[in-house]
Length: 240
Image (tube, rainbow, N blue to C red; front, side, top):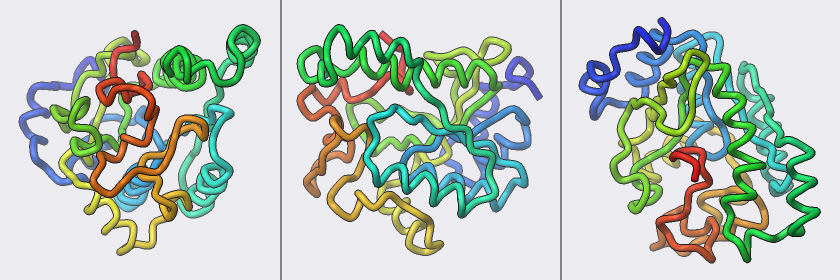
């Protein structure tokens, strides 16, 4: 089925409140040209679940060029553990060279993170999504009460276009808590980034990520010098 034929309102009703397996099963039954976005612990939980349901799982991840060494090792752990087709996406080299030449390596501390993220993350993602009909993310409502509280199980992507226009986005873990994610990781010995053992709960680029306190939302450690309502890089909202 293509995204044009997919009855979004119907499936939003059917999948409301459903568990991840039911949402993943619906995603794979309706779309062949679909991929999982992988970066964090919740995304590997999705990969783990998806590989139990489907024989051919497409996965992509973003290499911004500024990741922690632990993150690169984590990516290889996942590649070796699961029978997936992993596509590593990279930013446009000329765009990176121009930004660094004009503003240096750490302009985001001064100007905000949006420009750097637009080049290193949003651009490569946009190019990838333009080849798909649907994608699957590990977003959860409890990750950030300011930006993700109204997340739904399946939606039309308001930020990006797919291969034929409208792009469908599935969020199978939107009803889960962080504790449920880590319960699954422990129960099934799912690989995870070693930085999680050092207080990092949401992990992005090395200069823009730091550990959080136990009572803080997990994305509080991302772009900590900015307001909480701005703690998105453009991957899951309409780019500015």
